[in-house]
Image 1 (cartoon, rainbow, N blue to C red):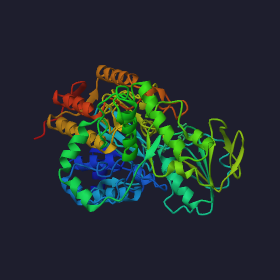
Image 2 (tube, helix red, strand yellow):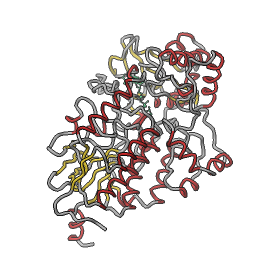
Image 3 (cartoon, rainbow, N blue to C red):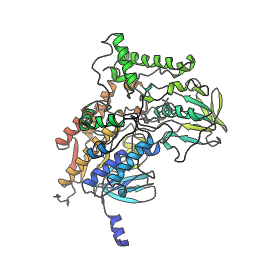
Image 4 (cartoon, rainbow, N blue to C red):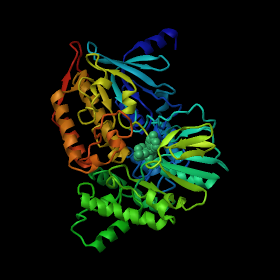
Length: 549
Ligand code: NA7
């Protein structure tokens, strides 16, 4: 290729830019490539994988069964891939993602080590100009943000970080080279899903583990185990029906669907249902035992007390057990966790728990961290402190819409979208599993596939009708924002100070961001919108655009 060819290629308008090469971005690339579109993917990391590229801390694994948390779009792919465990580890998930990339020849479209910093819409050409941190600039008709719901890490604003002499590792940015914790004193801050997965494994290596807990978490045993060939083969017969069934459920996780209120059955029946969920090892199994766990405070208290009784049974020291028992928020309103030996880890003599609710963190010191009670020395500090969820990665990019309005400003009081797919005033900018869609309240793979397919169909529709712009109307968006808020208000979710509503980030607007109506219902709404000619969206064309055949 000559220089001139290169110039022509670089300056030509692309059909689409996809931001992110995780599960969402890769599938979006595959589908748009299938339409014959010219697509570029920009990925901040040095390889594919998104969440599974970054979160490589000890114990990182998916807490939805691998055979459900995987792509369903290719029957050949799902038949040929063999998962080795019920819940896949991060390395296995990464191998799977790499396999998909090679199998569908996706790598050639991806630029790695390129974080998108800016996206500007030109209302006259109906195109976006996208800039990366390496200064590359491209123009495309469509931008698809596949930036992930949990990708922008949150780090506590603790003074003295520079004084601390040891390494500090965030679970969401874990080093690529091995971190040897053998014989070391390790401080872990945070007890959400990441902390709960990591702490038992750190305790296996470290000489001393100090866990700093602000809010205790409701966690249940994962009951992870190797997946036998027979089990896997059995699932692969009728795999399509299994996937189809998952898509009609509320969250897309393989678990029994509740039929009774917790308040209409006897105490024995209730106990039996909770015990069966505890033994099954399924994410959210306790809350899904009854229909009203997340709508009735009384029902919720019963479920919460069951988990607390289990914690008290497992943890020998009553004082430690009491600190580990979650109180003050309804079960399920902060993300539930699945663990392997989490609570039992606190029976080990070299593991101690610090209750930050009583003695908050004050600062880093030269040798460790300090609470209001005193200093805790540590050779390594692990921050398992989570993410600026759902909007963090999007707000980090300087996105300017139709009238130069910044997305950050449009979302100043909380995210506003129509269906979680587009934001009014930001035409042709799609968000995969964006805020106000089921997203993090679902099996992400199912929600990702649904969004990618909807977006692909939408772009196909626009192209075949010679349309060059799609924008959400203010009215449709207002209605959707209200609907999502009304649904959440009918549940106990707002009572949990969770990252679902931005409570973990100081100053972030407190808006419940996921759609709680369930993926089955949500899919129907999205399908109906498309079937009725994209109701609630304004579609338009540039004057000189000709229909494609
Ligand atoms: P989470 O679930 O947000 O957990 C973060 C934990 O860190 C949680 O216990 C927080 O307490 C704690 N935290 C956060 N900031 C601080 C400060 N400043 N001081 C002390 N403790 C703090 O993140 P994860 O990475 O565990 O999981 C995120 C999702 O990834 C998970 O749900 C899966 O979907 C995958 P808090 O509860 O805010 O009081």
